[in-house]
Image (cartoon, rainbow, N blue to C red; front, side, top):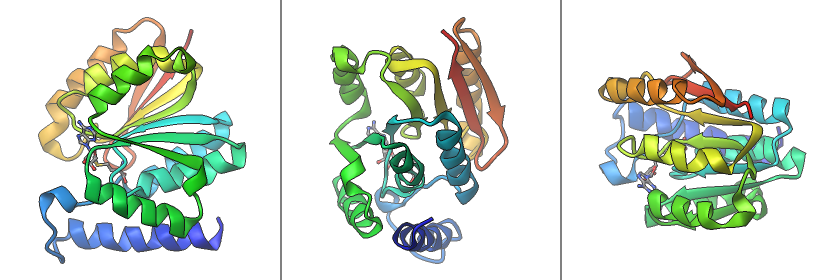
Length: 205
Ligand SMILES: C[S@@+](CC[C@H](N)C(=O)[O-])C[C@H]1O[C@@H](n2cnc3c(N)ncnc32)[C@H](O)[C@@H]1O
């Protein structure tokens, strides 16, 4: 991993750890709420295994997960479209992307995920386009997000969803989410205990 990316990830890991252990007082809308390092490594590895080029992320925050993915996507000459609604976090993400030298591979879509996903799904260019997706925004709409995203995923494409097991307050609704996916014919899915629990779904046809 190159030095610039490593240093930004390391800085964000320290910040995330301080926030999780409540050693710093950060208002709820400014918290990173990032994936774990282990999940970052998993995403990076899956992108490499798949040779994924076109990635969609729902829920960027300050860009920790995006940078983990960008590190692999760049090697595949790919690009990431990432969605975030919080303007302050977008500003911090832009700085992090610049410091990590990954900005040119990332297009930020600012606004509400539901609206942006609707726009993307109406665009013919994005039909069966994405080969790797991370869903990590609000949990209330996660089933709708999945259903909107699936037609935009190519055959063999992978969708990873964070927070399947933790925090516990999401556990019941994420179980429903997993059951929803299991009932869909053209996908195969597993819930992995890595990090905060990752649903890993592959589109079969
Ligand atoms: C769990 S955090 C994402 C963490 C990020 N994936 C990481 O690991 O670094 C969820 C993010 O989704 C954003 N978000 C929540 N609901 C959203 C919505 N409806 N539309 C767009 N962004 C949303 C929040 O502002 C927050 O930054």
